[in-house]
Length: 471
Image (cartoon, rainbow, N blue to C red; front, side, top):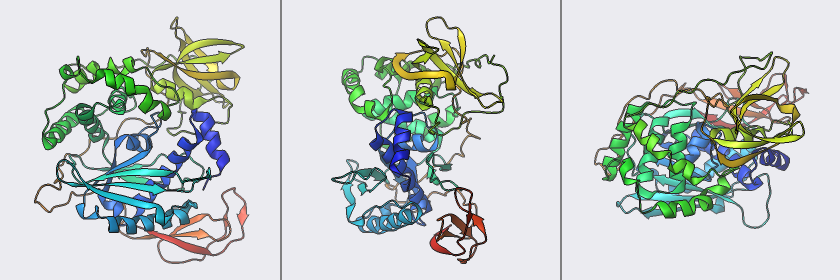
């Protein structure tokens, strides 16, 4: 488990409360524990806003819940879930030292208005902040009453903390197109601030180029399954819930974001989303920022995940502002200016360069990060003049394979075909009894070869203890 100081370092970098960062850290290990479980890992499909944050892009709102579609309805059973999560808790404790008290595992089974069974779970944890009083908890929403249209994808979990395993963490989740369609369906049904934020953010994110037809076909089937018409922009014009939506914008989103974008910015962009989704307009292809700083390492790109840069400048707040099209108040050379951030590059000498324009004139500027004296995200929105390229997420490799999952309400007993695992042979995980470094074996063998610890020093440990089996 990471220490309290690492949580505080991320808190400063992100401009968020330490307890929000701590919960994000815990979510990573919970996803890793679910993903490695022999039953849950094969039938739980991660979805929702937290899926976008942890599996697709980091410059996004923080979320506190884990939402899953369960392809085996028999698992929506309190006794099964208590047993399975006791096993997950034991694995997480062995892997990371995070304590999840078994007596605080709670799963409430309830019937939805459609007559199906869903579950709300609460998972208590003792994390690095070691807060007094009642332990903080993570909420789980589990449902089998959902049509899964596209093939699930296996994605790496964004876990930028120092105890991220060398092999990373993985989880099965909705494809980008399926998440997009699900969010559009949710916006129509409940019109909540997070749904508006998510739909517009998905549309405008330049690093992903979703298959529009796949999004619309998926939306058609999801709306048909729920028995509702496909959403159109006409129903949002003069929508009776608009005033309430705006009133709840700050209350429901401010604690999840370093700076809250203005409501009007997102509401006014909805027509562009629908024009794109209905094939009436293409997304605007913006030119790349004109890079003029000498000696740039053009092969380098900013890492996709959040990290504490150690520069004294909140670079992650600047990246967040860029992704959310918010101006930044930058202090440089003893004066302040309002800028539109577009790109972070590095010179061959290792200096980080922030590329931006002056908001009031549009003039292109370059700023050496080590000379920046301060930066704060503002609530002033800007319309991008250039492509925003702050992360190396890149486009999806290919459109997802089309498929239709049989929803639990159907009498059919088939389960959807899941993505193939890389190997059918198990891997046995051992941890060095001296330095606690992890080793993966193809057979049970606790003997360790000479090795170095996590800091690069020779370790005297020659035996390990068994942690778990991976499939």
